[in-house]
Length: 384
Length: 240
Ligand SMILES: Nc1ncnc2c1ncn2[C@@H]1O[C@H](COP(=O)(O)OP(=O)(O)OP(=O)(O)O)[C@@H](O)[C@H]1O
Ligand SMILES: [Mg+2]
Image 1 (cartoon, rainbow over the protein chains, first blue to last red):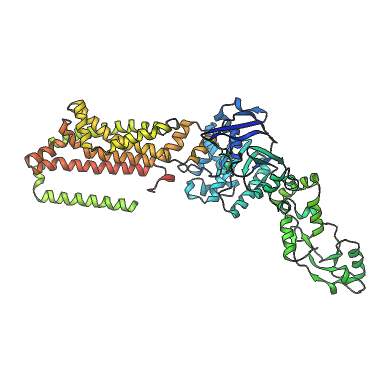
Image 2: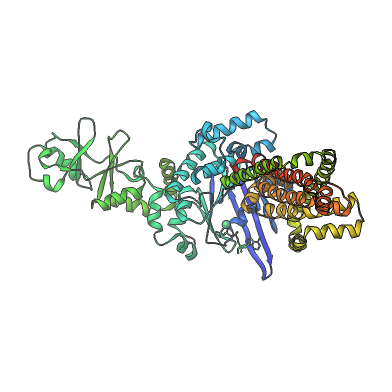
């Protein structure tokens, strides 16, 4: 757990004092990711660097797991905190292995244990230890360097990580991949992380809590869905953007809004029988499935009414299907591109897994905070 | 870059080969051989002078460069470096002469003159090499909990080493090139054969001094070049 108490920093500059942090109060619970978000110059980096005392606070206190850090030796403090910066900062004169072993060595680990750790971590981020450990940073791509930057910070298994725009220097596609990898790692490692970003999308994706800064002050400190659904003031609303409702789509998945009880029938079912279940349902459609429960077609109540025979005569092809794990942004995008008000979900095996309708999506977005927040957490995990 | 250096080295070897042929063909070889005892003695004296003054310049120059590059020196360092830079523009012969006016004649002024002449490039390259280490490396190192001394040893010096060694290479080249002048202020060395040879118009004597001097210069340059190749980490070495 990290607690900041009335943390204040005033820089004296030739043009007079600059208040970069103004009585910042914040608690980051153990195992959570807190993203500091805000426009350039709002004091995110300053707040972060006060925690590992790269910047000395003017006043205020910082507690890590209840321990007042101002009492600790700053070198020992820093060795217990993982630190990742935007420029990555791998030491070009050292091999990847040497880079990873820097902190373990300072902590007095024996060389063999440190090397094993380096190999284990390299493997964890999908790089072959035999191939990469003895290379130099210049022999790695940007994305590979970034991964090494992260695992170097993890090398001595610090409980706390500070990350200053760690994925800021990578292209969008690779950033997305590395973010996902990182979230997957975090699920297991459960570090307490403070993460600086100026990208709202990244914040929404990574954060358990977002702290929005302006002029050294916290404007709002809340879960991503709360920040998006209920911005505390016009500044926050403006900062998260007028499309904030759409951004919330990424926090939910099809699982959260699908109707698992949507009616289904076999191709050979009789029209009368299917018509009853179609009418009983708000969506007024029935998905037709084969013997293996794969969705194959659909029929509408309107077309069936008054008819007789088997439903297969009235069947239409399904426009498309989505995996139940897909986030709602992808689901809605599919709906829009196929010009449909509803969409069929399938599980990993391709079996029917419910139906998502536009009214259900709208209802979920309009829902009040608490349940959305819980769903949001599930959604984020399911996303990974 | 590497191949260009390679080429110039081959050229040097070729030139030496031709000189060798010329010398043996013209019968100068026997003439030079008559000075053999002088050559051995003076070469030793010469190498001693170069080695001690060069080593002293490294031992003093590198720490001074490090000291100037420390953040505490940020304000005064530039001014001090300006003085050093002006020092570099003074011809080495003048440095030797000036050192004689202060220390008289003999080994001491020769040593001191060569020391001063080779100090400047070492200090300058150490200073600029260390300042050129990117800030974000220092930030990463500090944030990981390295002490300033650890940062200096494990991050700053290894990353600046190529530039520092270039400074040492330049310094030793200046030193070896200037060393024959030591004879003029009573410092001995191979300059004795060269200058006396010139005065007496004795080509053999002149060559007896000039050839070992040239060989020494090539050897020292070769050795420092090898040092640059092997001691600088492959991760930051432009030669490999
Ligand atoms: N060493 C310093 N001396 C004087 N002022 C500083 C110093 N460091 C930061 N500041 C000022 O403090 C304020 C906050 O800076 P900070 O680096 O924390 O911003 P930031 O939110 O990280 O911005 P960015 O998104 O651009 O990285 C800025 O106004 C900056 O000019
Ligand atoms: Mg910043």
